[in-house]
Image (cartoon, rainbow, N blue to C red; front, side, top):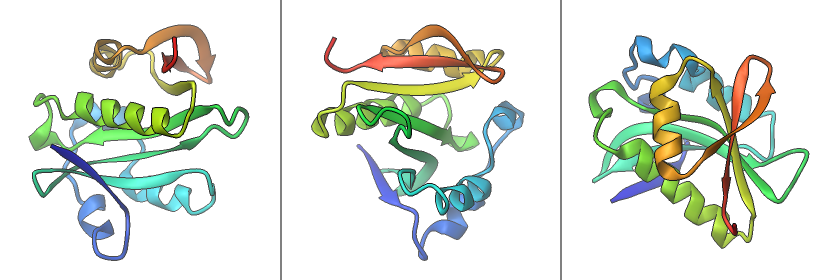
Length: 145
């Protein structure tokens, strides 16, 4: 079971200390992301828990240009918990939340050379759009298709 708890005064310090690896060079730090969320009212920052243990972080919200789309700004699983399917579970949970809100699509972007993340996204059902956001590849997940 996976659970999202909004970043708050009780969990933010643990969240910013989650261990990462070189593999996370593509993802902004949790500290930066939490700060960034303060300036984007549609972005919501959550700690990811599995069986009561904090295992990662995600930030997402309605796309600023298309409010029928949920945009995932960040998704990270801490190093000790990688390879256990938690990223897949987190993406599926986000998809369930988007569907419950009546949204039609989820979007995200990732570095072109972030092959591990692309594998997880595609396994869940995201597909590359061929669109670039800066130097990142944009992926979509269609909820009602």
